[in-house]
Every structure is written in structure tokens, then in C-alpha cells.
Length: 75
Image (cartoon, rainbow, N blue to C red; front, side, top):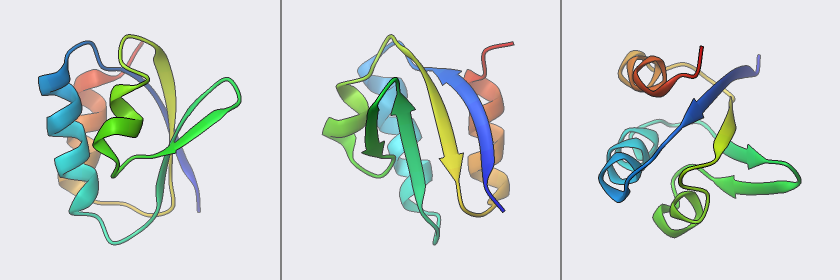
């Protein structure tokens, strides 16, 4: 099952928090903006998309990561 969530990160500190939470997950997570796809566990990859609204595609579920997604979710 693939979960989707639209989020927006606006600062390097938020990216660091996001990548740290994603790195604790034992499943794949992609960050997509238009045709660009980066690994959610890559700090530089996610940092390159900071300030853009991005879609998160996760292949599993983790309560801590899900809470973080809600924190940065775009209504």
C-alpha cells in the first residue's frame, strides 16, 4: 500500500528533522516535485526541494514519521 501526503518544508532544520524521521523507517519513501524524485532519506536531495510543496510517497507506516508528516502537511 502506498500512502501519499502533500507537505512543505521551509528551513534546513525542518529538512534535518524530516530526513532523520524518514531514516528510522524500514521502508522506501520518495519525495516528488513535478518530475523530480528524491529519496526521503537523503538530506541533500530533500534540501534541494526546500520551500516547494512536495508529495511524499511511502511504502509503509511508522507512527513517528506519520506525525511528522501531519506537522508539515498542507491542508
